[in-house]
Image (cartoon, rainbow, N blue to C red):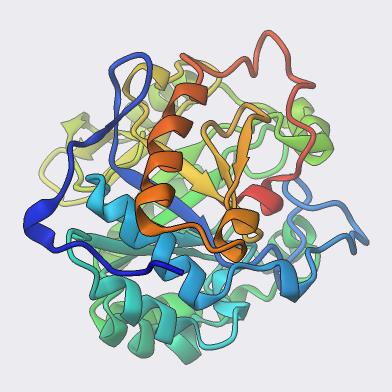
Length: 338
């Protein structure tokens, strides 16, 4: 098997899709397993996880991300499921952080294990994290997550701050009738901790996402509501994601809004996703994929892998159809990666 990383000085042209968008961000799922069961993400009692032998190995992941980096990808986010349940994750983070061309390595987590791993992932090269936190009320948090313990998450967030992970972004799925009475409390918590807060609209990804559609809350309304309490002005936060940010005037607090339904951001989409079993998804709202694992295990060369990645960009659609065809995506969010 031909396997040699090309020198960084030979980096090729950036990846572009059929609509002229540059792809420079990969969200990499390292496991589809999770230690929580958020009702909008994974069905209760779900046991259809990928077998570990079908997961990409660390060597295979490193090859794929190295190929992406040579094609101009500079950002990688480790996701799951819950990425911290993957054994030896800090080792993988260290290997990816050392790749030529990779400028930003981040991680999405529910933070329940972060008290144990915050220092290790920081030392390995993870610079910043996104943390899912939908409620600051212990009973409600447990109900949303199925079994989550709020105190573990808050301890993990404190450990992340102590370890120097920055920025810490809190991701809150805004849900009507579930947590819409806590938004001001979440703003105040993030202001106190020095975190960035981001609200996200529910998406019809899999049956779980569609079941949560009754709780859908248009974030344009949330922006107006928060503006009545806080003096919000347009702001910017570093990162490759789709949030539109506001800053609280006379405060360092930034509040982001991710609006895939009410105001989609497809025209600026710069990302693709890789599932734990090596399927390359070109759009969260589409089932088109390219299976990389069989190619890797059949001995594809580095040059051949790069060609596959380049040609895959033609499958990236112009936009998702969450509104027009909410039943299109049948896989669960935990199967794709956040």
